[in-house]
Image (spheres, one colour):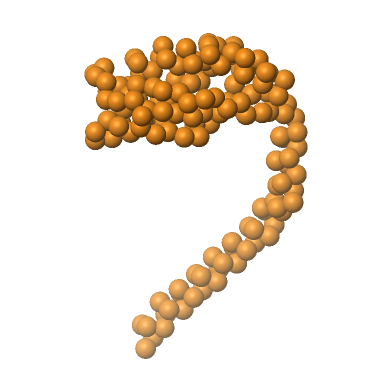
Length: 151
């Protein structure tokens, strides 16, 4: 009987000590949700307001590592830019499309067993490089790929 009670007692005591330690950490060390939300709000307040500029459908070739064409894919993207640069970015979208076209045929974007799945990270990197060329450095903050479908 003693052999059975001793491990059970150790298990119960371990659970109590662990639970008490977890409660103490959450109570005394972790910030309250209100102060965490205020800290996040203060940081975002320092940045300039941004806007998303949607781009029309972009048709890109899916190329294998060895340079063979696998197919085509259609992407929809949105560019996060400062609000004061949104008009500039909208006016210069054709330059972005040109820069994307000049990069996609040499960038292996095909993935999957049949090569018909686009590599999203690769395409995002292509768009970011093309945006730097078309609009200048630090104009486009983020690229959001909103849709990708085989063409």
